[in-house]
Image (cartoon, rainbow, N blue to C red):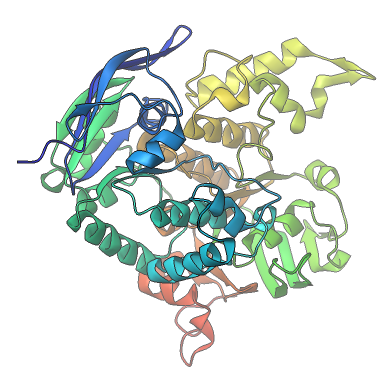
Length: 509
């Protein structure tokens, strides 16, 4: 009999008056894939940071291979064989992929060898990654690949993965699962955090459910249903999305033959991109991260105003050269994929983050109506059930899912005429996911034109009326979601819609 790889006993962590972990117990056996499930703010990330040495517990005991252990730092955790992929990445933007990964490895390994190992490991796991690229040129999905490959290169004895499949095609998810099962068969233990209940049921051997910082239950997910796991996590069945048939109106957003050269040698050039979104419909764009989504979003939002003026129309007005503020005045609102740094200023309060989009709070030169901002922020917090002490809370102190709810809620609350949203439910729990998706559908029903760019095919199939796929800077024909299949979308993500018969399988104008 071998002792557990990791055992936590009565672990407690407080942040002021907030109890993030309350007497948590967790046991992970060698070779076990163990899920940690819970709502946003349930204490999952804090618990993982305690295991990794990034946060120190106030009380409790940790055992590693049956022996008491106190992990003081991530460096000590890595020496024990613990590797972690954070939900919020820890990368130096001005360094290359290889240099970032090298920082977490032994200095005895030369950088060229690290670059070669990255390429080999990325190919092995089906994760496209260029070791020479500078991190600031990478999309959020590509940065997640860097974190995953960095963890795998340490040959860990315990691997902690936080939402690892959000950047992968369905085919790549299956390949990753096969690899994780192979890792587990060699004795590597895996702690797996995901809000995708079907993934947990398919992959994991054991599941610990956290609710409000406490263990709500421990179960074998292979014998559970999505409904029973949801009841353990949120105390209720997963909310059902109610949808009515769309009634598309006039064209709200139209892109015609948009071509843009790459900004730098690591970017993706857009080639003859054409799409349209009508009032009263949700249109989705699927694709693997790094295929031009970042560039297209920048062109649509106004962050990149290099397009020909007539290549982008908003309610008939040519806006290709307009900036962000001008487009917002015409009714186009935007949710970026990067929460911290672009969607929100980390050090500012939630109320003051509204200044990014709510100019009506500025009453004159140098005057800001703080009471108005606090009231608007409180309204969003209440409507979207954001777990936070209040409007004065700094954005960086929220969990990833709660910050996502606030940012999406901020834009929906502004009553946009056109909403472009990237990764709307990335890292969000099942209850909040259902709420955000239902709010997007409600926007559609109210006549808003909604464009969703997501790497989550389940999400796109659930909320969209039509689908495009982006691959290598090119956009596929659109296809009605009702006639699309996961297999077809997976093929199109590889740019295969030009094959004979592929574009005829449901393309529509």
